[in-house]
Image (cartoon, rainbow, N blue to C red; front, side, top):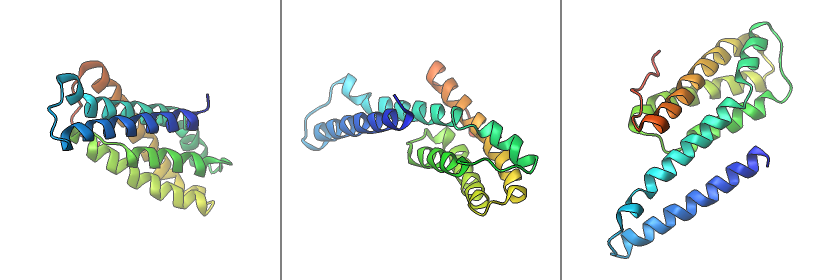
Length: 155
């Protein structure tokens, strides 16, 4: 199954879960303990999907190639899709600054790629690569320990 199909499936399931939770809260019914955990499950599902997208977006290769003056065909689309995924997710407060920083750098990188300007894109590619690792590693830490790491967007 291609990533966009997985993303669409996760989005559809997440939307259905949110609507189910909203129905309980707005209908005046008291949700069960399991139903109260649904928003957290949705948040974790989104974060896991974003981490996967970041890990498979070839950001390392883009960093290396742009810093050697080489453009990669198709890189703009990969960066844009990853940025939209990061931008669309509900992040724990502890990770929001890192996500925001990554989105900003990705937007700068997108501009350089759109303009086919490897030299202006190179520093942004490095920051995107590094920050994407920080965010994805934070997601894996959060999912495995239950504790979101402290925001490190200023690393």
